Image 1 (cartoon, rainbow, N blue to C red):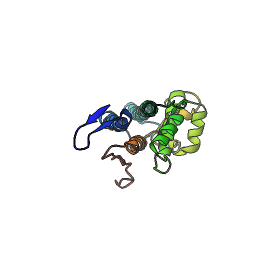
Image 2 (cartoon, one colour):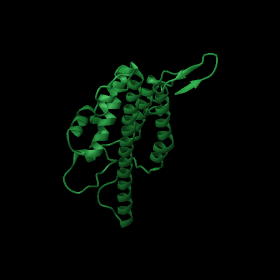
Image 3 (cartoon, rainbow, N blue to C red):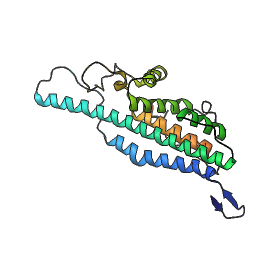
Image 4 (cartoon, helix red, strand yellow):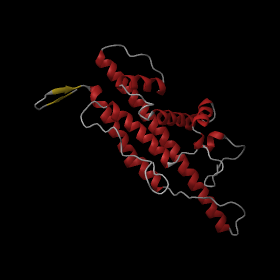
Length: 228
């Protein structure tokens, strides 16, 4: 609890401080770790197939395939990280809110229930504010990254088929054996931008303090260099 001195002296409750802290922590993680790491990874616009004329050409093609595969694995791992941190933040804030109200918090298990509790308490309509679909997608991606095949993979393929693109020529699965759908999940930088925007916007909307940032400066670049 913090006391703010000045003409309007007031005491800030923990629940009022947390949304801004959470938003700043996510922003720092993205700007100082995730974005630089992703931009440092080599990614090739297309991968060449077919018989190579020389051994050097073969090795260059193989290296390009590994580069793109590694970048995709990194993006999936960062999605898992963002989802895990955001879920933990929801849990912390929900408990702080109910502690301040001196009432028992409803039992919550997992991301969806914590999100519903926090959104209700903050008065946020996650669909109306544009964050709901990206938050749900992010968490479902995290489940697929963790567990591979299963119900989460099937649901994700139904709600976000654009995350699978078997017709693209910029990705080859490096695993041997039959095709595994969860291994063909594609997460690109534009998806990470959507996820960081949704998580930081949620906390901006939950922030009751003055000068809350409700429209974080993260944009997916559309074709032609313009922001979407």
